[in-house]
Amino acid sequence: QVQLVESGGGVVQPGGSLRLSCAASGRILGIYDMGWYRQAPGKQRELVAGITNGGSTNYADSVKGRFTISRDNAKHTVYLQMTSLKAEDTAVHYCNGEILSRAELVTRRPYWGQGTQVTVSS
Image (cartoon, rainbow, N blue to C red; front, top):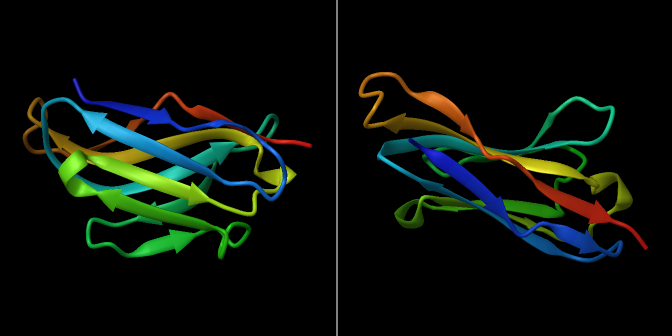
C-alpha cells in the first residue's frame, strides 16, 4: 500500500518560515506530478504549488515569491519551503502525488497524505 506522510507543520509567527516534507513509501513504480494543497476551515481545498516529474513548477498567486516547491526523486519526497508566512496561510496542508504502484501496474492514481497543520499567528 502506498502511503504519503507529511511533516514539518507547526505554529509560527507572521514573517516566519516552515519547511514541509512529504515522503512516499510502499511498492512504488513511479511518481509523476506532485503538489501541495491547503484547506482552511470553511474553505475549499486549493492548490498551493505543483511540480511535474520534469521539474516544472506552478504556484498559487497568493504564495508566489514566498513559497518554493521541490522534490527529491531518490527519496520519494516533495518539499514546500514557506517563507514570509502570513496569517492567511493558516490551513491544513496536504501533499498529493500521482503514483503508479506495484498493485496498480497500469493505472496511475492520486494519493493523498493525511495533512499537517500550519498555523501562523502572533
